[in-house]
Length: 138
Ligand code: ADP
Ligand code: MG
Image (cartoon, rainbow, N blue to C red; front, side, top):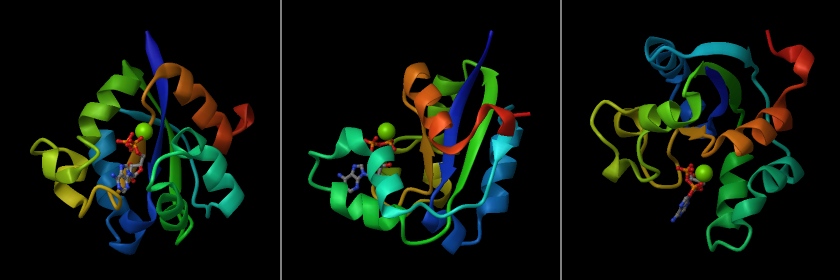
């Protein structure tokens, strides 16, 4: 059964100009792109997106990093998309990410880690709806 997940290419991905390589990596891993856009998060939107982390010490920095430049959210589809995409991106801290994962290949730090991936099918649904209307999804 196919499943959907939300990816975000974060501001450091675009700063480094590796968004094309990361999108190719995602396609090579077998994901279908069902929706994609170039956008910039407002502070309110970033705060809402990361609301689950609002008590964490890094919340303020995370919001300012995520609003520091444009991002590319993507709705991805594949069998087992949520878990498989987490495997494709690797551990939150790139120092702990497996070889060949996107974070291992491109990320510099636990904060500036290139890409977001939903962590459960339920969160994926809400996160996709944060960026896309049903009519945006092909
Ligand atoms: P993931 O993105 O792997 O699901 P989390 O949901 O735990 O990781 O954290 C959300 C984002 O917050 C991370 O991707 C990263 O950008 C940032 N972050 C997580 N942990 C830290 C930390 N200890 N210090 C700074 N930033 C962090
Ligand atoms: Mg997370």
